[in-house]
Amino acid sequence: MTTATPSSPQTRLGRFGDRLLTGVEKLGNKLPEPFMLFGILFLATAIASTLMAWADVSIQVPGADEPTVIKGLFTAEGMTWLTTSLGENYVGFPPLKTVLPILLAIGIAQYSGLLSAAVRKTFGSSPRWMLPYVVGFVGVLASIMADSAFVVVPPLAALVFAAAGRHPVAGLIGGFAAAGAGYSTNLVPTSLDALFAGITTAAMQAIPGVEAAPVNPVSNWFFNIASSIVLGLLAGFIIDRIVEPRLVRHGVSREEITTEDAEGAAGDEGEALQAQLTPAENKGLLLAVLAAAVLTAVVLVVALVPDSPWRSEEGGFLPSSPLLDSIVFLVFAYFVVVGIVYGVVTRSIRSTQDGVGMMTRALKEMLPFLVLAFVLGQFIALFNWSGMGSWIAVTGAEGLEKSRLPGFIAVLAFMLLASVLNLFIISGSSMWTIMAAVFVPMFALIGFEPAFTQAAFRVGDSATQVITPMNPYMIVLLGMLRKYVPTAGLGNIIAWMLPFVIPFWIAWAGVLAVFFFLDLPLGPGNGIFLG
Image (cartoon, rainbow, N blue to C red; front, side, top):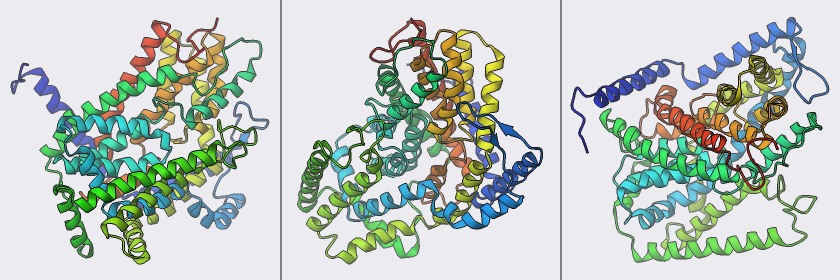
């Protein structure tokens, strides 16, 4: 293999890329602190919504009976809304119900020693070169856990890298990027597939005269399998060849910066990552695995009995059911059960007080996020209540519809629009509800199957959500990152995520292009073109 010389194009390109990312990092870090940033965004949204409300601006959301009228904060209605819903906006901030329960459970699994022992056992004999690809695949496939993936995968990936002597921040960043930028695909059908299918089917009702193949949760399955493999490999390559070398060049710390009262515990844990498993730890891991198997059997029995309370009213699980709404509970239960079993066997848990202390330590680390969640909750609530999100999405969709671009060029423009809108509207189901109502009928009229339009949306929906401050889990990641880099800001995260965003978008669009130009089936019974 040829080695790049200092003056070779490969070296110059690498230096240019490094300078570009450094520039993005410095520029991004000049942004105000997250609390102030979202305070400014809240004020800007308040002013913009009020001006639009005074101008009687409204937007017709496709499928809605009445137009959505923009509501302003600095009006009588707006001030009443704010003063009566301040607490609800905070407590109802969606990530809190995901992050906090899982964080408590992970606290038991982590501080009992289970996670570090499992990492050493699982990856101790694995080749170091393989770890980035393992993290890439696990991150991409973690969407089966829904939003829990953003909380579970990054810290575990950091532990894996640290245990192998690699840079833990590379695992942290890579795990989050793979989970977020590849969120809309998986090797197996997930609840998101069922949700998208339901929205797509509803959108087709606008043109009943068009005969299209029914869309169901496996309509994009073949496309998702190919996408998962490509993105998993690509994520591993980016972690290994771009992210980790850059972290090393810039001297980013490999060690957690601990507070004084946690130094002893953190030091013990760091030593444990380098040590061989003791007989007690091996026994604890074995019994923890058996406990997980027993819990799995219980869950299956409860879920599969004919009259299971976890079934929907129709008796199934898709597209929605109490079982799918119990993902956070299931993740919580698994971490708690295996953590307690391991802790009791290894005697790291000797009383209830020990378990409570572990959860307290885990929650203490997230106190900065709980403060940020207050202003985040107010901003997101205002953005949704005012109707600004719907206005941005529908206005963008109408602009693309009027452009009348031909064939696959129009599909690429549609994906690009979805990526831009994804910077403002993080909820994929909300954005697809709006965009599907416009583009599923529009693309059907020019000969594209609804399942193909849905597949194209997946590409645009995921890649950019790891670089937008609108993604609340970026703030969670920032808290994790500051354990290693206390001065880290959103600029650091955005710069470290950019190497994933553009390659993911291009590679994923490339997979879609292969299916398009070879006219390959996207899933069982679903092709590209009508008829």
